Length: 534
Image: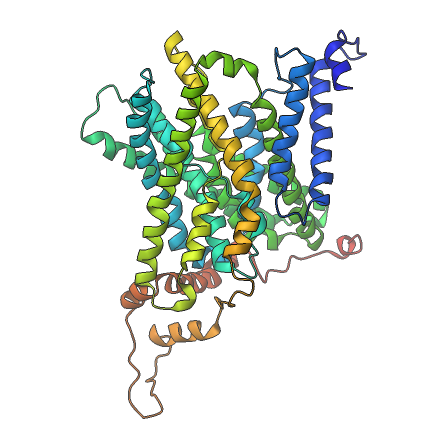
């Protein structure tokens, strides 16, 4: 059927504004999406496959068929571009990640998540950039500038931990799942912010202030993007609480949540901020406040709608990446020998391995030395899984590669730029298919079958904090009539930073935020005529 659509002359449609090639492309992709859903269901219990790998392999198989049909001229059915990825496919995935995240686990482990996602990504960025500068030039690629090598560091620092998250169980290993999930989202945002920071600087005159300017730009983008997402999320909560759109139509509630979430992403991109960070924190704020201000039917609908959109976008990305990897024009443009291509790809992947290990194990070691509680320490087997989870590369890597290397000014730079794109594609395909396929059996071998349950929400810890933070005004005596030694807020913040911040945030949230923006415990006023329709 695909062959006929490609070989036959264009059909004369009754609607001239519809293109036959566009209809063929959409039919192919919808068919592949449906096929991926069915195969993913059938292979749900398979140890060696997951939906990401299935979608990527389906894309590769479809691209191969198109190559044969077109006599190896082109595999393009629907062109994968950075605009398609960043404007339409990535936002629902990141928003759903923030909307569905277990906030207690995420923020109780927020310190280590930030260390891995921000500090770790910066370490990986520096090592990959310096290593690429030294090794790729040694191989013989001499037409790339300092901005290109810094961009390579940002591009290859973007992880794709989907395969690992599909294997981990957040109920059995909440600490490990929270770290891998949180670090994956923060890492993607950090990588893109780093990439944008590199693009915004002028490297024609490099001096000692260039590194400080890069760091300052990164911190500014990170903080302002986060603040914008929080503001838009609070705005949506206030609108829902004040107007209560559900008294007339629950569809309006869902529509307004989607529109405001997407608007936050577009405003961030318009202001040259990080849309990923903005929409992620917008999703967190919406799930904390806005979701509790809508009707019961809208709560159920929103959770399933956002998860479905995220699933479709994610599957579409892997299929599109698989098909676009066989675009024969990219491989012809590089004009590099097989040995050079393998050498560059191997070098880049080796830098990914080293850059990942350079921060995972040292940061985990420092965290274990500071933490005295055994339940919150990261065991070596968990460190290995965290390291492994960040080795896969995905669509963010390819999209950023296109953005950096798609347009070159000279012929020689065009060849080297095309080589960097094809090398990035090889890294993505190899890491996703090979490493992703052995993720499940590897984690089953490394992770204990009966993990020791960890209690993160123990009320004893809260009571201890209340005592130590002078919650009560009267004297507190122990059983031996000795005065209880209370600690100051500063000492508690140093010894128990996450729990202390969480404790004070809960007090502030209950006293000031919830009365204004609603949230958990808020019951919308449902008129009688509206209640009869539910």
